[in-house]
Amino acid sequence: MATGFVRNLFIKRYLVIKEDGLTFRDMKLNIYPSQSFAKFLQKIAEKKSEEYLYKLGFEAGYDSSKIELENFGILKGNFPFKIETINLLLQVNGFGILDFKIYDPKNKKALGHITKNPVIEDGVKLFKSKSKVCSFFRGVYSAHAQLEFNLEGCQLTETRCVRNKDPYCEWSYGLKFEK
Ligand SMILES: [Zn+2]
Image (cartoon, rainbow, N blue to C red):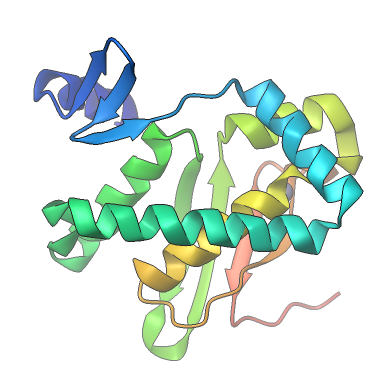
């Protein structure tokens, strides 16, 4: 489905390759090799802390989310459509595939599985169980959850992770887990 979606974006000329790079509508996209991005994020976490990297991710997600909301009327659609659209936008940008298992904004509860994030995957290849890359994207997704998914005050926590050989990263909000 995602591949068809991306192809459609090119056909409808939402995604266009110009002389200075790729643009999504009028927004310029900066493509960065996932392996070097993983190394960059790992360095930040090692020099500062994983919590610092999470906060940095949150700031990055907050700003990009604001830009998306300002630019794209498509995000004003009805809710299932909106979730699908945001999800596909995240996929196009290489932020992985989000699969909501629990989505309950009224009771401030959510749980999702994230797969196919190329930077997280390269982080695991490079740093094995010591990869700290997920924290950045957990921050990014927390900001998107607050601004676009109506999950007020959402700070996601990680309960399963590909760096521990789980098949996906599991991020949740407002749920208690037995340790
Ligand atoms: Zn993870």
